[in-house]
Length: 326
Image 1 (cartoon, rainbow, N blue to C red):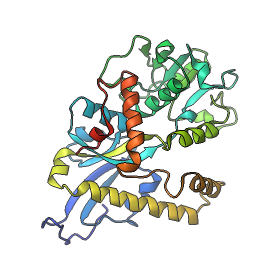
Image 2: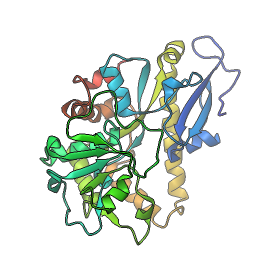
Image 3: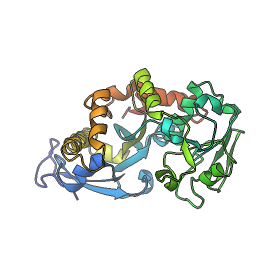
């Protein structure tokens, strides 16, 4: 447990609340987990999870890490049991997430027109952003033959389908996509996680884009944001019981993020070239490449909502204002 002052009174006149959140162990949250950054005005039980928690399915949780698409789709369908915080604990470019065989002749998104593509989930936030890249490159998603399945056969515990029926050109498989790509059943696959062999010199796979970093930088300069994948949500009953909680959690995680960055810049020898990466990141994005708050995330949220609707995942076009309307 990470605690504030247990005898401190809140501005609402009651003793400090005990809040329970579940998230994966992101580096920028480690200062909270270790107690180096502490909550102010409340006690926090921060649980580290191996996979993204289903906040609504766990009665003991006040909130936690939630898929951006799952949250937005809930709002679009009138489900407001979760209150989203503009605290994106996971965000990242998706150009790197398209893999092909090492001997493939494909080197661009445009070349995926009419291709056979496997992906690890249909409504997923990350795959939605990746398909958006294809749309921007002029690829008709309706002309692609999509297969949804696990990266490795036997993987479970993930909703790969979402609440709406698949389009006609999308099918489901239980076979591993990585082996399917290696066997030539797919021209490319989309995955947020790299196959284990990708980190070896003998990998059968490579990124579709020869210089995905350059493509990602161009994307950032064009859009002004790094795509949000997962955010923090609170159960509505917890929010209504503690209306000050969203701001308190956002402030806590902001302090944790800044503490983590300061320490990494000082203790940069955790990987051979981390210092160089930290330096280039700061020079490209400024002091904060993953800002929290509604205003700095409005354009990104609006773009994501538009993609969910344009790709037929959301039943209606939802606005950025609705997403964070408590």
